[in-house]
Each structure stands twice: as structure tokens, then as C-alpha cells.
Image (cartoon, rainbow, N blue to C red; front, side, top):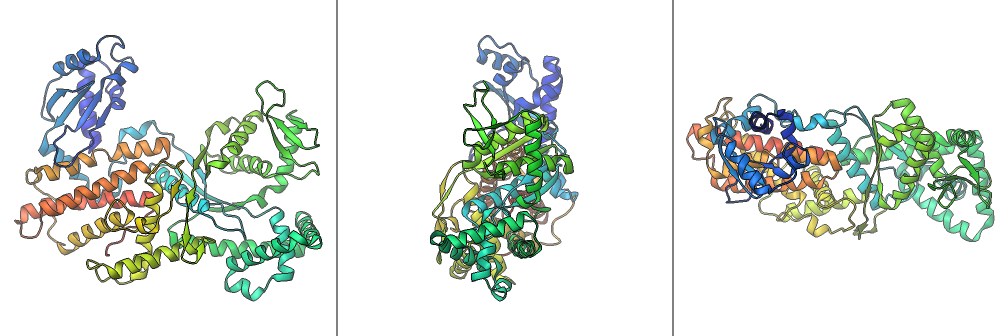
Length: 579
């Protein structure tokens, strides 16, 4: 695998420069491949060695590059060493490249491919808590919640595959004045029968009706305030109705999340922390951090000079707490309960200031672990509508993706007969949705486009699924042909070598993704792999080849299929075997 070659080259450099071989690992990287163009396998960045003090930082960098390259000798692993512009290129022995890269796939180590790389030794391990999705009960599940769901799921999957203990948390908007409105509105507009039939839809309808009523009816607003006061005072009738709303909603969401291939370990919410929020206020007061503003609100001074030029409100003038106060309580409670090593919040970029204030206040309170909390922000999705209009629930998006993909499959001449076309269409539709979202930087806004997203041609989630299904079909048709032992010398064509060179980058791509939590690196790696596999299907046929050649080529296709499937699962995509 890549780490074998990287380590061998690093050892060679260590002996030449009399340094620890570990010092060279960060400066070595696999060379990106280009179709029809032969490239070296690894490159050494001389500027990285200068920055790290391994080489002198002064002097002509090109002379340094050529001088070091001339001191390095070829051996049985590295067959060619050459100086480029500020880099040294290494080409490894072709037969050894084939053997080492495809070795794990004959030992039932498919899922562990590249995961034992030394690159991951520097990553933080331990317990990672990821808070994502977090819709509001009875309100619209808007595109932002959808993005939070799939991005958070990717981050949790990535952390888990790299060896972290991951806690997946859904922090529901299940408290606040909206429940006063919902409780008061349900007594007038609600229906228990409709609530059982379609809980999310009915609660949303009631919420819309009561909001309209409250706009011109002060009695309704008063009824809402009364209901929420009863809720805060834990009066049994109000609490029972609230619990019913929450339980029904969580059950419904679990069903929809299951369709999406998403699961949570914990369904938490603001309601869990409204009492603890008052304790946080007391702590802020006792630590001298709570000030009273001219409006009578409780604030924390965030200014560096202490002149109240930048404050965060944590208490209303009537003594009730705010969202950030409950977030402070939630963060402290999670550290006490789960002892996390890092906590990641996945929300849209409009909340960046909220999290800046949250982490600032936690640090001011003496919670040094707040330095290990991170906000992963994302941009807006523009124009996400279904045929029925604006997206209200996640289920609407799933139904639309399934229906459109099913239509496309029925129209396509290449579609295979599958046992459950609706299930296949849903999985392919979801993968298309995820890939469209993950192609660019998360903080960028993007325009949602159903037609482009579901194209069979082009860089889409449909291409990932089609490539995987085609590989699985090839492997199944040739069951019994693939052997544990194969001859590496039968895979020396440039088409084979290019795929293996691309796989050399897999651990680097996962490492880069773990560093910045951006899925675009993995998406683009997998799309490129699909294009290389398409070329291999044309140029390296299994059918009609001798048994030895067929066995070798099947090992190549099987290895590529495993990496593609593993990468798709990290993204949150369930691979299909037929389409």
C-alpha cells in the first residue's frame, strides 16, 4: 500500500540526510494522475524540508533539489529518481506497485484498505461528539437542516472509520414560545386522529394556523403565553401534550432518517437544558461575568478591553433564558456526561457569531475544553423545490429524488432488471443529492438543480452508483475465476498502473478530509476513480482473456470496487449492486 512505499522512500532520505525517517513523511505525497499521461508515483517537496529545518532555508532551491536528487540511489523498490521544479520525483518498481497495492484485497482486508496509514498517527483520537440535523418540531425541515444532516453524517462516518469513538447527536428545537403557540393552537385546530395519521404534517398545519390567528388575536397570544408558562412550571396536562408532540415527531423523524441511511445515538433538545440554563446564569453571576444592561437584560462582556463594546445577551429582562444560555448548559452537560475529546457543531454559516460567542463564554467560565469545540459552517441551498412547491419536510425531498430517478431508470436502455426498483431509485437519488451538495466548499452557496444532479453522464452521484453496480456485475459474472494468488506482471499496462497510482492517494485524501472536514476531496477522488475504471473496462476486458490475465484483471477491478464502496459509505451513500 501507499504507506509501504512512502516509508521506504522516507528511510532512504533519512539515511542520506542522517535524519529520522518520520521527518520526511509530511513532505512526501502521491502524484495526481492524468489520463493517458505517465507520471511519477511520489514527490518530495523541498520547500517543506526547508520550512521544517531539515534543509537550509537560504540558497537556491533548485540547486538544493538537484543536489539531493543526485545523492539518492535507486534500489529494488525505487526504480527512478529525478529532480523537478522544487520537487524530487520517485517512480517505484511497477511489479512491486501492483503486488503491494492489490495485496490487501486477497486477505479480506478490503474495508481496512489505507486505514493503517502512518499519516493518521498525528490525528486527534478519542471521543468525538457531532451535533447535526437538529430540526425544529412543528416547523419546516428546510434545506439547511438537510445540509446539516448529510454533512454531519459524513463527519461522523469519517471520524469513526479513522478510529474515533463517535457520538451522533440530534439536538431538536423542542422548547420555547413555539410550543406555547402549538399547545394553544392544538386545542382549537388540532385533531388526535390526524396527528396519528401524519404527525409532522398535522403539527405543521396547526402551527401555521395558530400563527395566522395570533397575528390579529391577542387572546390567542395570551393563551400561548399561558400554555408555555404551564409547560415551564411542569403542569401535567401541558407537559403530557408536549411529550406526545415530541415522541411522535422523533418516531417520525427516525423513520425518515432510516430511509436516508442516517442514525443518531442520542435525540437531545433544548428542553433537556432549560433548568440547567438557570444554573449557568448563577455561575456567570458568581464568577462576576454577568452584567446588567441599560435595558435590564443579563449580558456577558466579550470585549477585550472590558468596555462593554461587545456583549452577548444571556438573560431577558423578565428573567427567562435564551437559546445561547441553553447552549452553554448543553455544552457543559455533555462534557460532564460524555467526556468528549472534541465536539463538532454542524449548522449554517449565519450562526458563526453564535458559536464564536458560545466558545468565548465557555473559556471565560474556565472550561478549557471549549478550545476543542468546533463549528463547521455551510452555505445556503438556493431553489430547493419539489413539484409540489417549497420543501417542508425531509420526506418530500426523498420522495421527489426517488420519483425522478425511477423515471430516469425507466427511460434508460441500459437499466438492468432489479428486485426492488423503488429502493434502488431512492438509494441512487440520495447519492445524487449528496454528491451535488459535496462537490464544492461547504461554505459556498449553491443552486439546487434536480436535472443536473440526476444526470447519468457527468460527475454525479449517479456515476458513482453506476460504476459500482457495473463492477459488482462483472465480479458476480466471474465468480470462481478470481484467485487468492495472481501474477502482478500481467497488470503492467498503463491503464492498470494509472488506477493503482490513483489509489496511492486514498490515505492522503482521507487525511486531508479529516484536517478540514470538507467532503469535496473524497468526492472528487471517487469521481476520478470512476473515470479511470471506465477506461479500464474498455481496455482491459476480462471476457475472452486467458485465465491468468482474467484473474489479474479481476483483482484490479475488485480492489477498485472495494475502495469505491468504502469511500461512498464514508460520504453517507449506500452502494447498489444493480441498476
